[in-house]
Image (cartoon, rainbow, N blue to C red; front, side):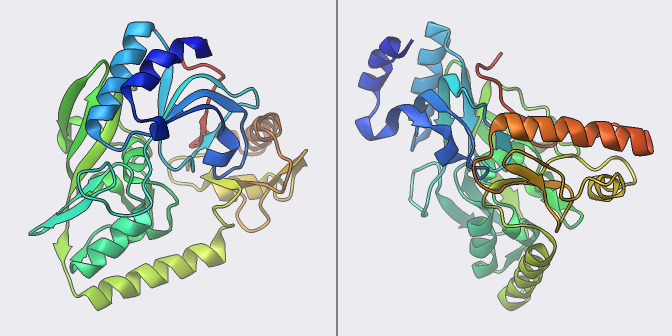
Length: 309
């Protein structure tokens, strides 16, 4: 398979393509085998090139942001990982951020923490709840990430993206199908950016809320490093963490993976953990909660297979 990638590599800058890239280096869980090819597009045009080539060659691909809500397989991924993540604001890239009146446009690779800080500096409120979520704009929109009773979809005006093979699209928020930790954006669309509609407020007041949310997260949840955030969605009217705790799963471990003593809805890789460990632990938790409460928990984290469907 890897011999087929030469043509795609010729269409992109060498710095944007990596063969047999360890996925453990691109996951907050620090778990996963190699990707046959990882592409790191900086601009929308490069996303279109990648998706067009992958469609024509019938090669599987998935889009990736910060890798904070995914469990990669130990065997790796046989297709293309399209990673969109920037470390600093850069004009005309997929991690640019700019303000227009009470709106902020953010590229898909912008971290939610950076978006919150930028918004605070602009005196615009509405995304400070997301400051502790270890994701980026693109992935967080796809999963409608949320915290403290708010969610990303509440503040979106429209979403920009590329739909395979190379169609540039703009999706109004009302057509995105935002729901609890999900959207109806199809898996053939890579989100490249979004427009946020925010509310004017004093920068000091916004920063105070950011600090309060950050401290609360630190005191109630394990570090984002070597975990993938909440493993299960909260069932209607209840808390997955409470149900897992009540079922006696806190501290439960399989290999290098264990259920956090701080928050039962987090699984932590304490070192040497594998995807198999995490998946076994997830199924054990699910069975115990079902037996204890009659509720079948649904995973919030994405469990990637060796090859995408």
